Length: 220
Image 1 (tube, rainbow, N blue to C red):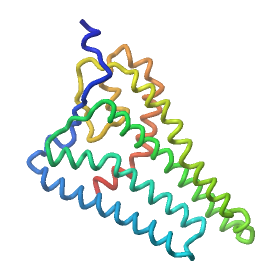
Image 2 (image 1 turned 45 degrees about the horizontal axis):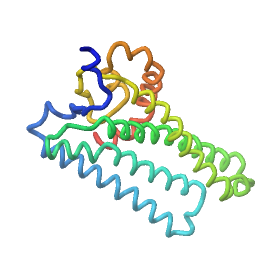
Image 3 (image 1 turned 135 degrees about the horizontal axis):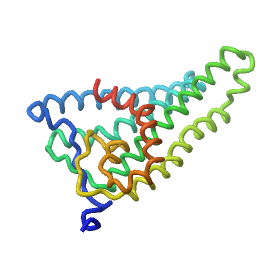
Image 4 (image 1 turned 30 degrees about the vertical axis):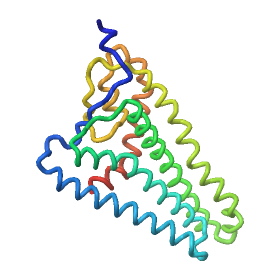
């Protein structure tokens, strides 16, 4: 009987802003405006840097990467949130929940690496100004940019793999407005908690590090 109630292929119900359903039109408008401003603003940065040759410098290349990251960041969670507010449909499939979790945390790790590389770039520019153009040449900058993106998306495969093996005992209400590792693990059966402890600790750390930019952008 217990096995019949355990599953890892089901729909989850995101709690979101259920307590404020009467204000859904207002909340939808606010989040939609913030989302559009974020996407349009970052797109403008990318276009300006691309077409302005004088801005083809290491720092602006990193800023372009950061703009791409911000667009992907908000696009991972906000469209689903807007759909929830517009249709009052809080359901999300387990598969899409894993995809959302994977992209969100991968981008969080990528952002940490990217900000670290940008700090190193400024260090070289200030401390070794005469050798800056030699050290931060185009090839080095492109390789560093690539190195920012690859580790995050590769390492998060472990987290998603562990999460996909978790069984849930009849509970499907996620106390969040998107799929995050901590609220998902809180729904797991007790006999799964120990086996997924590594993923929980890792996910909790990434939530604190990576969700700041996204939450700040969405919640204003």
